[in-house]
Length: 274
Length: 291
Image 1 (cartoon, rainbow over the protein chains, first blue to last red):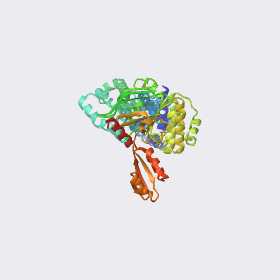
Image 2: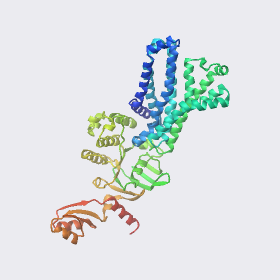
Image 3: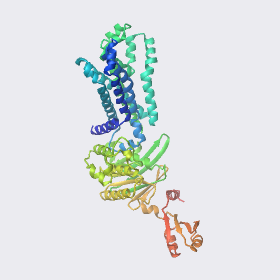
Image 4: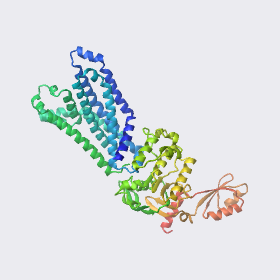
């Protein structure tokens, strides 16, 4: 465990110095500016529930940014160590493939966690000012769900990194995966599933195969436990089984994380590390 | 100290190492000699447990394939090209290295010893090539390994670094530590290498004392500054070849006799080129074929 701790700490520090992590945190700063008292006032004048809008904005930005930053940092993590010959030196020391991978995962996840907390922290001034105390917990629940999304994409990125021969190949694959899971899945796969299954409950459960969809449902359930956003279509069955959908999605996300990390480990064991 | 038994290594269908076997005793320093692409680096990486292989590598009796962590604790490895990282300082890396080996070292003292004290807090990509080589040399030996593997360690080292390296090898050899050092040029290590291993095309062509390799090795090249009048005699009597004004090169079969002859002829200025790796391998292959 000491080895994992040392490797994770090194990865964590190096992650915090990563310029992409900085850009990531700054994006939240922009959001914080966007949700200035003036814009909140504007929304209120228009008769909209400002707090709900702000949280929705946070959800949307998280669903794009968290997977992106997780993939950018993790896809280059192992292949980068290979290219800089750091891995050659590191593996001549008493370090197992498992400790190396675990250290990478924990270090990367923690650096993204800190950046996310900083980002949400910057944007959280409105929580203190505008949210009633019982809603503050929702805000922190949203952060936790965002971190769950980060875990699955870090594991996915590490698998891509192990399989890639160059940093460019790894980054390219990472972007493709991000694009597919964030955009394409929504546009085509979901409509295909809905038309094929013709059952909102089944389609919702199937949709959780995409971790982003699962996390989206979880995030929405935080601010809208009744799932009123679903409207009237299929509302009955789905709203009665909302916890089934949420539970499935959480299990799928955790399962994916373990699956991707496990595959990355097996691949690392199977091939030469450099 | 080190036992290598029947090691083979394939990259796909290409066999890089072919049935390599040898051993090194405590306090022995062996030089690994070979042309580019002969398999020297691959062999060192297999022994260091970085690459997988077929066969057996035992470090102090510990099987590298079965107990890699225990075996690696006993090894120090200096890669041919030290890593370059822009996100970790020398001190941070050293700190992690000591934790990985479970040792407690005074970083100030070690960085001072390797003339890196002022660079402790620099990122590794801010180090010069020589400084980086010294940093990783430090992290090759600071855990006091029983077996030190070095891949072209003289690369990038200035005279200070070279002296440091030689002092380290002599000091550690005196304490029974073993060395396996990959080189291009024999002359850098001939002073303290006990054994030479010549690798060619993935095979171990020769293993033996340094002196045995050079006995009767034959051709060495002598570059001579031949004053006026001597130039012609050099060509006619010693079989030299004129390569410029007052400059002659002689390919000597018997280096001792040729040098004595040259001195007797009045030559005072000459330079003997060490036998190149090609000459050595040609000779070993000739011996092997029984020619």
